[in-house]
Image 1: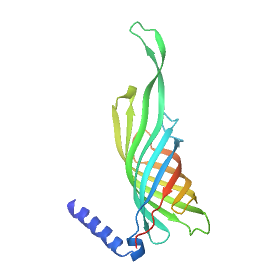
Image 2: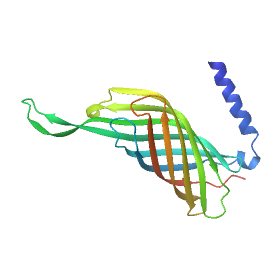
Image 3: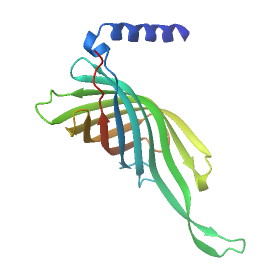
Image 4: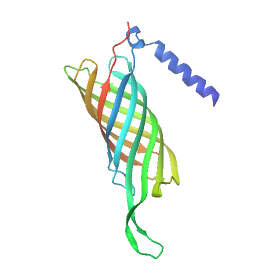
Amino acid sequence: MRGRSLLGAALIAVLVSRTTPAVATARPELVIGAGAATAVEGDPADGGASLSLALLWPLESHFRLGLMGFGEDLGERFGRLRDSTGVDVGPVVALRRWTKGAAWRVEAHRSPAGAYDAFAVATCGVYRVIDEPRGLATRWANAVGLGLGLGMTRRIAANHAAGITLRYQQLSRGGAQRYLSATLDWRWHPRATE
């Protein structure tokens, strides 16, 4: 197992050392996304908020590679709360399902002809799907997840852009193995060091 880790680290070092000097000295682009998870497979399936944070480094002129952390609400199921005598006192969240994790993220951008930039995105990472009845985490499943999506950004200042990303997520296991996430993104790209 340790040999594989060393081999992976050596491969990354070789890839980074073969980049052009301008790309090698570039700082990462910060991408903050906020939106919604929807079209969730399973029960509950109503979705909820989606948040993400990514650091992406330029790799060649059209590609960016980096790490992304995320948290997504996959939905709630409601039940009825009863007192000790059996009287119904109202609705209560019986189960909340959400996921969090970290993933490698790669983006393939077209050459921007103007202020707009379209891209394709792929993610691969570790997801933890958590079930919380009444706010207590009782079940969780760790899963490998893959995501594919499309996005569009518009430059709004020299180093800033805003856009939208739509991603399909497929998980290897857990209570919700498929869902979509749509986020509004803010991107900050610092100038490369000389």
